[in-house]
Image 1 (cartoon, helix red, strand yellow):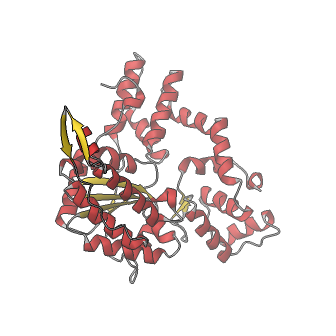
Image 2 (cartoon, one colour; image 1 turned 90 degrees about the vertical axis):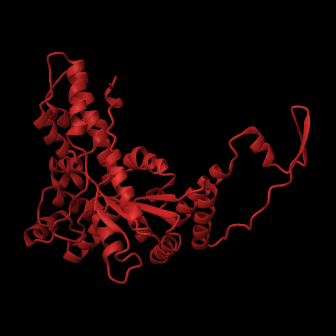
Image 3 (cartoon, rainbow, N blue to C red; image 1 turned 180 degrees about the vertical axis):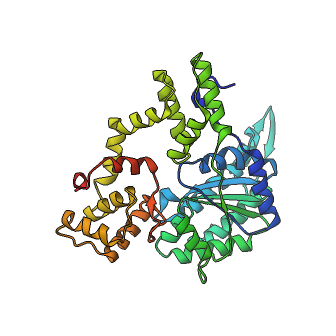
Length: 375
């Protein structure tokens, strides 16, 4: 029973086991889970998939490639090295002592002779070869398969010499398929599609792409029950909760915060809670911080897409020209701006007429502004 809103979390062990079964059925072939950011992918990896993997005797290793976009292969190797260090540390005091170069030690009055531990050849310096060697050594040290969980895998495609990195990763996944399983996550559907479905690309048709399911009533109902427990005689409408959850992009942490804010004021109108959230000075400052470093054309494009105007339409270009007197808007410039904004994680479906902001609340904030306020 939850004692606070923050205690409410959803576990999905059945989904985790189904993913592991897929990996067992197709050794060496990764799963690629797509979903927008902050809908619970990383939480699922940590709290559901990793425990289920351990139950099978697998060793899960996690690497967030978004945090090391300039050198993603180094990030993967670093995660494997940390796991290898942990696997090689003996769990007992005697084991730790045995791992030292001491020749003779005293244990409970007796003298025990311990030889120096055997040394292994140094790991290769080349990142691709190092990846291969680390997987082999880690599987041996762990005594079972390794589950490599790579968060925001599209960062590999965007890195310098990305094709070479992807080719190296595919080669290792195939070579070590007897001891290495892998799960990719991605928050850019277009980037994942380009990486995994483009003929001739290193990862072409290599991974199985899955749409990661967002949470639903299994998350909303416990929130509503706790609200009713805190506020006797008050309740949150289930349909209204679903509508707000969809409005904010199915983000559980944000939904929890909105319900907490409503609870603090004792109100049951979650749509009102969203409006107050959007008007909060801290949230406005966050939105402005996103806009500040952008060029005027980029900010204008975000405004156009937030208002659901056709980005390449004749009327849109005519509307933008007076606002951008020093930078004549053209279709080619707008496409380049879309690509920049997509790389920043601000747009989905970039390059097409279906392009939209990835954060629906950021879009709502822009809908409340006139174009001149952004320039």
